[in-house]
Length: 308
Image (cartoon, rainbow, N blue to C red; front, side, top):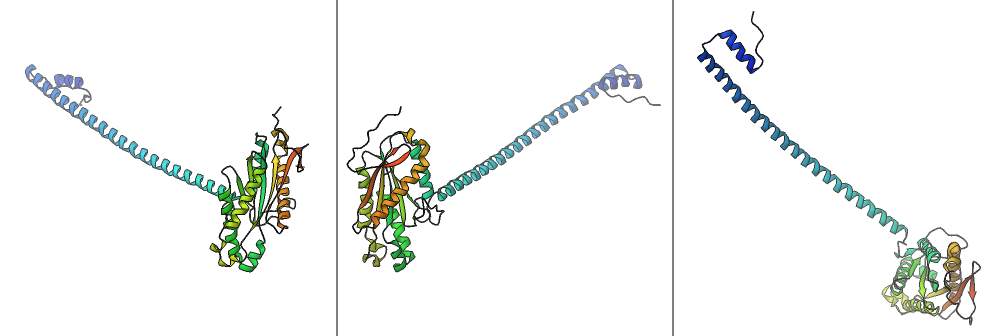
């Protein structure tokens, strides 16, 4: 019965000696031949193993490169999508803050900006809030049609934008927006408002308002419609000049103060509308005991006092 098969080179050599009983010289040649075969196959195996490792490494590197490219593409896509939505949100935010017809700030946003200004502005100088209304605007809509009325609104908005200083805020009331009886009840789509945040003296507010009014009167309205030559559009302006004083006196009443300023400017504008002659209605005011108080004509301007 045959014994167990040799598993190693040494076991094979022992098996040759014990089983074949060859002469020493022939046995030596046989074992040398066996060693040569083993050595050759070991070399071939090592070479194939190295090649296999190289192939595996190359394949892994290629796969990693593809994965990297896919990740980069996904990152680019995600970044592109992110930029798109950021732009979309910015665009929607801007549109929600602007009147679609004139592209001016809408009244809601203007009020927010005015409240922030009154609550935070450190300079205790003059500022002014003004309202501008297109005279007899209903007549243009009724007599010439709403298309002409729209063009008048857009042109007046452009003129006001051109006449404003870089620091001034101009807003048109949001058309069809919510109204409250004490703030918006008499506002219409042909009314505009503006804030002049920094004035050396209150006379400058009158100059700005007059510049607005004069620019509208000097415009050649026949460029919009020939029929406007008969009755070219005019505007009425009401302006309230506020002595800002200390920020501590207005910080906690900014919302009420903004509403009061707009109401008073609105009242002045309608007083100007009742006059036949075109001119600006203006009043001066200051904050006293948390209330907006008118400064009578002839009274000396307030003196700017430092914060305590």
